[in-house]
Length: 445
Image (tube, rainbow, N blue to C red; front, side, top):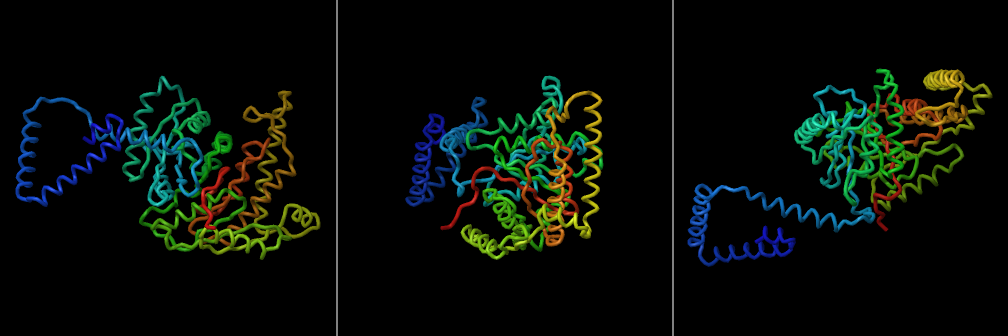
């Protein structure tokens, strides 16, 4: 009766009939357990005989039909309105091979599924693993099916709740742009894009990676998706490698609580349950540190979060310029800053020579570039000082979480990769996080 009710679209009626049958079975045992056993045995023998001698036929799976009807009802009940923060669950969209430097028979980085499992809320959640194949869809459709089967086998082997999707597109950037616009139904859409940091781009001289990396971030911002970039994925612990120490948050911008939520999700996993959370607030030198610390503690208390709050003052760009002009001694990390400046100056000079020779404005990736060298120096200095602060306070941290700076307008993608390389330098394991325009945590007030 349950299956008939489900097939008729009346799933509630089917459940009611199933409960009635269970109740009747209990009553049978209460009246006479011996006759009940004999009746069940005879019914089983008749079913076995019919299954052997009866006419073969493919009747399908009734439970699959019931699940389908239930899924449709649930999807309609979710609607298209914004989900309340208390009911918000991370649905990560995981890019498996964004930089294309894995062996051909490896569908995904081995540690990505381990990280995806760390993002589950209360043990529940679904991940969407996607990969792109560069080329023409008509020519590579069968290759895409084969790659999808390999990715599904990987997900099953890693015991991660998720689905696999393979997209064929002319390039990685175009493929991701299609994915981020169309993946999902209603409120059951991915809300976080997870990608590993391209640490190999300079070592392997992969000059196309900066533009792809910036394109992915800009597409996520346009589509209002959160972003989590995992640096040091090779060192990410599996479920059997327990971590000790701290989970350090460098909270620079309000992101709707996503960074705080991720730290709490990490604590719920056996790998990180022995760690403690530290929240670092970056402030300029003239900021009232005690007042800022009190405000952040109050905010964390309203969120029912237990964390140590540390306020770190950082010299502003203007103060740095004044001290440099007065002949102050540079700090130990000045060499990395100077190296990045030289590489950017070389890139900018080559770009100017090319545009002057061809008689056209400065263009990169089809967009006009207007470079303010003072702003470039400011970005470099900010990333360098933040990296120095992280190395000073969090060198032994299990994980460091930091806010993701958006790509500056009219700056070449190469410049942004230089900024990011300065930020992540010598930090073994880091999550670079950007939230989106909504809250994902609730206040206890």
